[in-house]
Length: 66
Image (tube, rainbow, N blue to C red; front, side, top):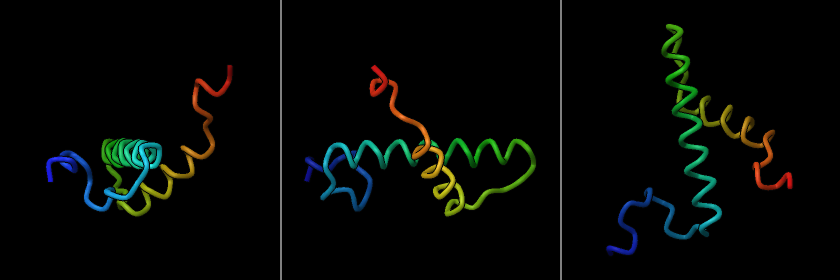
């Protein structure tokens, strides 16, 4: 059971690359929600995840450029 310690629920069958993408998506979604909160607005987690996925899809990784 310790093999799965520190991993999100439901991530047991993901590859390392998929797990990394999930983590990046979660971090970006939380940043978007925090940013919206500072402006006095609220952003539902579902909307934050959708926006984060869109934004992450538009950016290429830094090491892919060269």
